[in-house]
Image 1 (cartoon, rainbow, N blue to C red):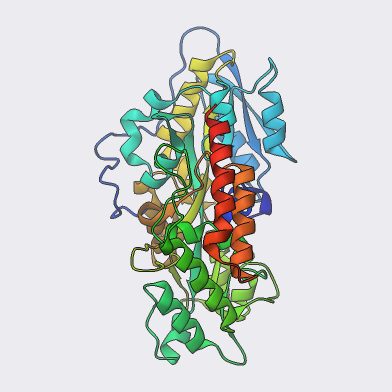
Image 2: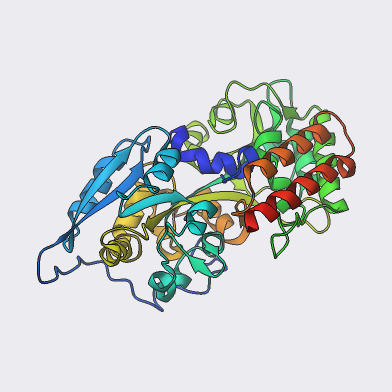
Length: 430
């Protein structure tokens, strides 16, 4: 998977403002309750309308050909795929300000706040409502804003913690179930030849930044989105606990590759590595069955496991020339055509189908670490709030770095973050 497709997942850790499942999971709905047909759509009487569908440039070979084939197989309209290289988000935002908008297009997390507020996205709430229980609940929670849904999830990417079971067994250490146990395990397995824990050459501060909020049992924002919701001792203790971990010598800070590569773990440079699900094939090729996966463990007594996820959603332009026809196409492709949904997730890299019941049909997720990873998203998945703005994210990241890297007092550092949040959120609320 190339870095473009991972952007929203990398952001999910805290590097930018926008980001970054099994059948037995917490979702009680299923395909059996609301059948989803997989056959072709019948052609209506009269001439077909023309629809244009936009995708960003995916790095995996074969994706472009697949989505063009999907479009060609739709019988109710003439769908043309536009492949958009470069800064897709900026190009799309500019195009949506014109009179020549794409009918269907993908957007990170199902639509930005600016797009929704500007009325650029058609409301798809009624379209997905009969099928809502089929989709991953964590993803649909993130895709819902003010009780409306503007995008249909296409596929899911995520971050998670890899570990080597054999190294834990050799050190007589159990698989960690909380952060304190992770620290103890990383120290126990560390040797002159292999490090304990790796999450990036910055010590993990960048990618794990917002994970500390969720893992300490907090949310980013209050329910009314008027202030941050994590300024308490549980969060402060999580930061200082990670700071102590970083100072312990068990954290690798100079690996051969970054956290998103998987190479450091595959090369045996660490017994634990925070990374992306997209690295699973390479890691399994290096270590075979000696691979386990975990959510980031709970931090503190009120903590909980956490994994960041991201998902592109298929959206419809509200001022397109054929809105109803575009909605029909989106429903056909991303709700009804389950064989295509599985192919999109499984044939080009390692991704999680957006529908819970389709996960076992993805070969890389049918069992073992892949199946565990998919379940984490349903049960422990989090994504940046839609109002976690760029300025707020930057202030937060700086404070996290000051606490963990520079030893500053967390309570004092985050006083400034609270003020930035109050200003930014008031501005975004309008």
